[in-house]
Image 1 (cartoon, rainbow, N blue to C red):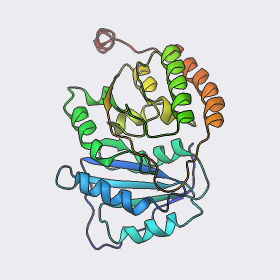
Image 2 (tube, one colour):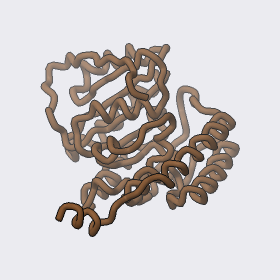
Image 3 (cartoon, one colour):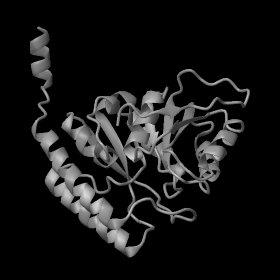
Image 4 (cartoon, helix red, strand yellow):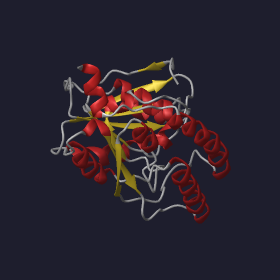
Length: 263
């Protein structure tokens, strides 16, 4: 995932950026031209006046109108930043690129297809920021009422059940793109392709906790899904084995042990 070539077009809106916003909202996209501007408008409407935020879009080498629309949007939305991969690297790499470039301590991630509701971001971020130890907490969205096909919902339910049993992360919906956590917590996690689906297990591996919050889920109105049922299944099985390996080789010292070593 490292070493991905990328560019960041300049903002021409004439409004200076905040050097260190409170919140960075990271949105990975690939060929989402029909959803780009509507989603930017929704995020800004949901967060303006509530948070000091920046919106970081990472274009994973789209070959439709997405790059041009994002470049145009820079002049209209001063809170927007855009990064672009010059080669397709995948959703996890795009999320990592956005978080590495983010200026906020708090991160919220959001899928770029419009199915996540930006109105839910505030509740997840608030719960994280009110935690006594936000660096050891991940707040995950739970799409209690999925607006997907029957086959997709069934395959997701089976995959989530298998994952919870084997990883013990206790999270009902790791596939939801809506999540909130601190930038430092993410940067301390091991990197691998498809890691975004295992963030709860990786947080618990580091000695943290996960809280799931019910969120709205919407039908995909425009564009096409980038995943199929079977490619998720087979890739997910290999990833699951890898995360199990990581869990078994992680030793998290207790507070007493850390104190003793310092003494």
